[in-house]
Length: 233
View 1: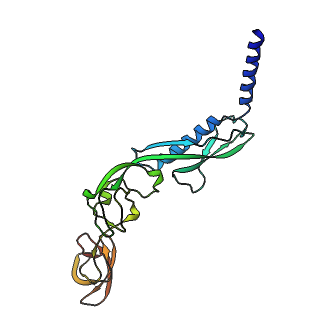
View 2: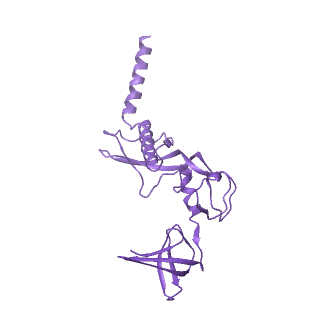
View 3: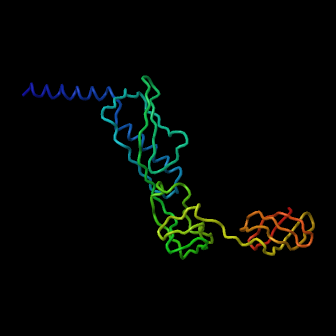
C-alpha cells in the first residue's frame, strides 16, 4: 500500500514538473479571448454583448513558461470580425510569440428592414425595426438608431429582415437637374436673392452648381433643407 501511494505521489510530481516546464495553454487561450473581447467592445455599441472563443492549441505545442504575463496584440490593419487572430509574445527569455485564432461574437441592437422596399424608396419608421444581431458578421457600417435611416433613400432593392447599412442609403435629392432654384447670396450687410437653374441633382447639404437665369453665370453653393441655394458668408 505504501509503495502504491509513493508511486502515485511520484507520478503526480512528475506531471506537475512537466507542466511547470511549459507555458499553460489555458492561460494563452484566456489571454487571447480577453484581448479579442476588448477589441470587439472598442468597435461596438455600449450595450453590446461580446463573447470570444479561441481555437484549441496543438497539444504538441511546447513553449517555455513566461516569467511575466504574455503580451497580447492585434496584427497590423486587423479590424474586429467574426474571426480574428490575436498575437501573444513573451518578452522575457526565452522569448516566444504566436497567433491564436479567435471566434468573436458581438450581439447588438441594429436597424432592420421590416417591410418590402425597392430601390429609390424613401424609408419611414413604419418600415423599420430594431433587432439584436451578431454584428461581427456584418462589417462596420450597420446603424443602431431608427432616425439614421428614416427619410433616407435606398440605393438598391433590400429584402425584409435585412440589416440596414450605410452603404444601402443615400439622402434623397430635393433638387433635380433643370429645376428652378432660388439663390440667396449674402456678405457683410447685404443679401441678394435671384433665380437659377440647377445643373445637377442635389440633396440637402450638398454643394450644387447653378446657372443664374439673369446673368447666365454659373455659381456654386450649398443646398439648404428647403431646396434653396445658399452662397457667400
